[in-house]
Image 1: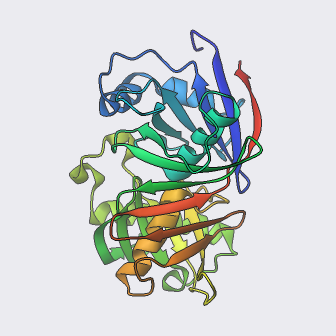
Image 2: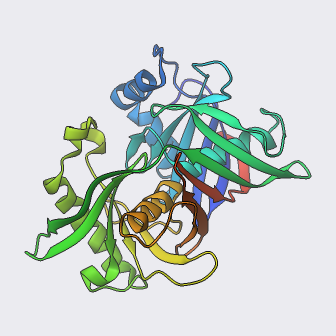
Image 3: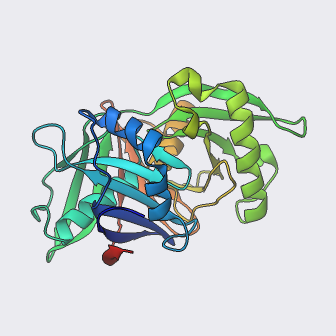
Length: 308
């Protein structure tokens, strides 16, 4: 059990919950965001499970733990506490954190004024849009996604080969077309199975340990994508799948950026063009520029209180 009260605010993205821990995180000896992430991984995984696992959570709950800032001008240090473990960065949890800080009075309600967060992946920017004191939407601005391998041939457990792009956007992704796997995005059991198979195959092709990852995050997220729909902006059906086969109802901010990076790499999405990444429960708008990537989302608060 935690030694002090945990104050939280829950935000909704699609049908999934982004839980922001506003107060009550473990006391750390870390002096940098990277050290804080490492210390949480090594010594405080029970805290992560207390926050996101039953009976207080479920497989659709992922958290953003807020710590004191390490650098001037930032509102907090953010560490992602997902179902899969601790992570350095993810987009929609940061948007939820900004929403929670503003709507609980812990940060000024200033529309279109940048809020900065310290993370183990560097300083991250959130631009909130505020209407009558509430955050109606917010935009995450970050560094460009990194293509680790483009259209890599991955050998699945059944012997088939599937081509997927391995991309890092804060989380590591294997982006694969549904047609490549011969499945439909509407077939959730098939999508879940694909996530498990692609995650394992991607690790065999490019170990995350080689990229400096720690063993508790030794899996890729699979992003299964459909056909790009011509509209303004273009729309792309997607399914976000963890290596355990959990299918999210949202594309996720980092997932939306991975989709944009894949389409840019294939020549289907020019720089400066917006994209709508569409999952079963949420649509996120995103895009790439010369300087980086961005994702816009709504994460309305649905609950706040104390975890017991």
